[in-house]
Image 1 (cartoon, helix red, strand yellow):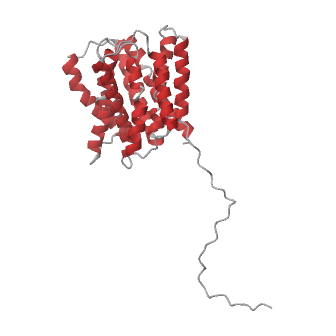
Image 2 (cartoon, rainbow, N blue to C red):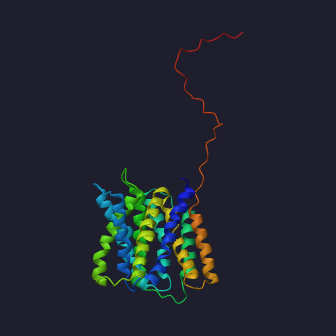
Image 3 (cartoon, rainbow, N blue to C red):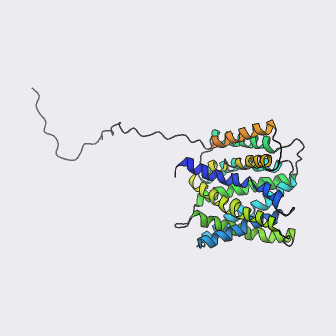
Length: 311
């Protein structure tokens, strides 16, 4: 698969995540963020485990737990906490600093060079997202800001470690995704029941919403994401993240009747341009086949040439 196709498929993950807000507000019971996170992760993970029938072995039990905690188990609750404590899209802005975390971690753990181009693209993406989702009346809350930053750092660390560890030989990305979602869901479960109590009553609409979140938004979405992290650099993959708030804004306008201001449209253009810029790679210099190989300096083995007398 060429790089353009890998980027396009990976981009489908944050695009699908952009539908989470609309589905949550229109189909699911209100004020149950932890239960929603649980229903996104655990059924999706169990579905993938049943489909692949592959369990971790050896060191991968611990790695699956660590990745599941960083990418799912800690990320989901902290993300929902930030969303509830930070009105007006501030949580999305705080989360948009994730590429900066990834740039730093990838430089340390993966040896990826933190270029000025990548840093500029990450800052521009965060600025564009702020124009899309931030409102003038937005209020800051210390707990919410910290939760958002920790959630972003958690997902960033999980992305970089996913890239560093890869996957066991003979195990596909679908199985690796199932391990992480199952581990993350099992970590969320006790927190959800302790904080929110028994599950709410579900009707056909909420069941359909949870099925969509578990299958399309999470099982398929995270499979595409981890598959993309394997094929792209960690920074390039993470810089596709702004597509999520852009998609959420477009769905809000098209399906929920929300208005888009000129400032929001400008923010979409800036964020999308930064996303494209984050995929740019300096082309490698092709080797010139017409250039002859250098002549060796050492004399080839064999008898020494017989001197010829000059006339």
